[in-house]
Length: 194
Image (tube, rainbow, N blue to C red; front, top):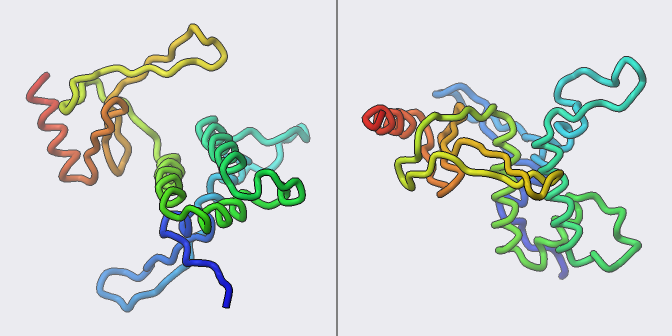
């Protein structure tokens, strides 16, 4: 009997979605199927999440965020370079999700690691990132930079320490503080050093 091995959890969440309990606390479990995160990213890139539809002048919709577009480009580039059918011209029309599925069958552990990062990045697009005007208490770095691809000599400087409604993290050392209690603890550390 031939068949596919079960998909690792992050791969499943990325290309198929996952079931989540939507019942109120204390109520019987009620499961709902969440859409695949790759669909969420595609919608963000296409501007569909805004509900604005086509531009009034008949032109293309503007992407919801350049961050979503940049992530979409990184994912599709990586998948197109890594998946097992990359050298078979007839298979190039497969969707990104189908390519990830095929890739996961051949190297599930590595693809799970990659997809876990992508899932986190897609979920991160849901929340606005705010800067913290302080050095990271773990590594001491207060500013990081990215190279501006339009200008190889140019640098875009950003605060190292940032937060969303769910967590705070350092862009330099990748330390993170997840949830209210850890973020409250971070605030206390920052306030003691100010």
